[in-house]
Image 1: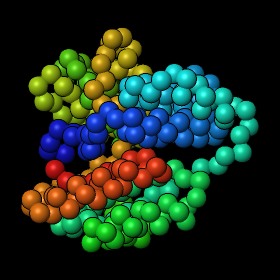
Image 2: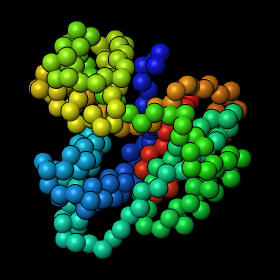
Image 3: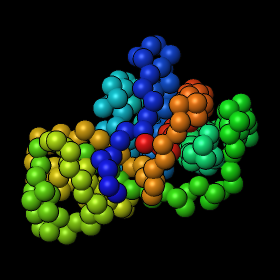
Image 4: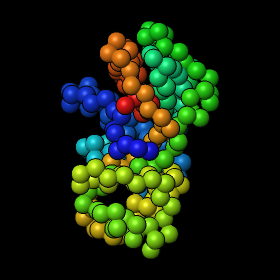
Length: 237
């Protein structure tokens, strides 16, 4: 891909409001993962993945446990996964993924963010074809030979491999997420995952001028503030 993977997320101060949003986001994800499968993370790989991400973002155990218990207890809450695609300033491309209990409300709120920044919400497929859905791992202190050895011994399908300093970036298909992660952990028990996520990777990157970048930042911040938004992906450098 010609460049090291960048975390395309907008950092927020650890205010009480920001923490509440993070807890709510993971609470919904954990609830949905547990309700759609087994409430035991050892038997449910998706649940295990979400819990690991939540702990990395310092979500307390009681938040995690309450979400699992609610799903196991047969709660009638239902969330729908929805994805919106749109065009921001400078013809930038954006993918917004949400978990919602009211699709009409969420659509209206997301559309409002685009409208207020003179951006355009597109139809399904208008942006997605310019991205690849991949699992991305960034790990420390593994050489190219180490990773190639792991790939050969465990028959891993690695799409791309990049190095920057002491960090290696490994790209693989979403379906190989659990297998690749397990192989890395088996090779090095104390391996450090700087990044461990499933995300949308653009085929090409775009650089905006200062004015367009300011508008894009406003759009991204508005979207991040919506309770139903789980993640935002885009094609900006």
